[in-house]
Length: 310
Image (cartoon, rainbow, N blue to C red; front, top):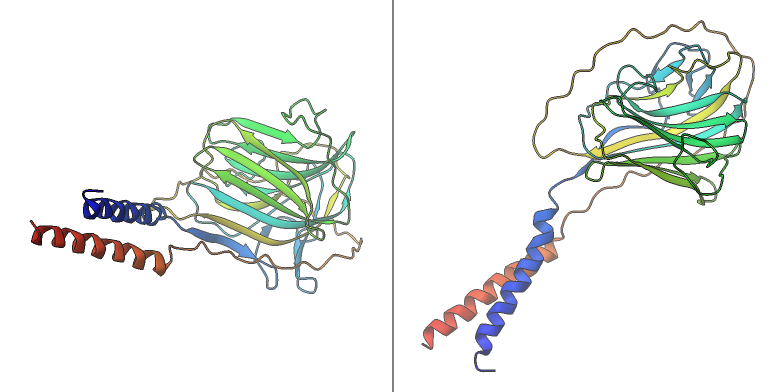
């Protein structure tokens, strides 16, 4: 080759560009917006302390929900405006009567699963059995839902019918990708690690403006006297940190229904869960930066040598 030094300089420059590209792209970080293992009192708000309460002995949160009562429990306010997020929790359902439904999700102040914005997971008991549900309502009131039963008319799911089991601990993960506008639910058997069901909603509209994690049945006007009962644990919400400061969206306040408490004497034997470890997104290593620096030095040295020999 007639000009080996020119070729070497080009190669060093190309290597430098390749090394710097991932450093430039990795500008965002993931932040834990809310997390509780229920080892201490989470201070959730509820309108039925006899059915929904923190158990300090089991270190879990108990729920017993029935339709047409406006039953709810929710977290302290969460500082989220928009963007991608992941909601995770563990659940063990000890009783789900036919016609009863357990719901937990990320919602606005209305906490009505028929009103946006929300992204809600549900475990229900229909005529076809114990099935899972992924439900969303956008701020523009577009409502979408899929279930693990392809016979359900409102569901776009076309796979085999998948049912959950009572007295089994499941890890539920809901991922929202703000770039693709896709909301995905994945349910995994906590003990075996085997995935039970996973599906998505892809309607091309943004989710934004949620400010609390909630469980309950506000907006469910089914038959009273039917119960969805069990325990939740290890609730966590993570989201991308915005590059610039944003102003939270103020939610309109709607009066919430009251609940006439009915103590229950039923006892359950919960399963002790393992807290979910918090993951940290890794930044580019110092070794990559060092290699990039060597590339710059090498390019400069070659250029200087060429100038001297001209």
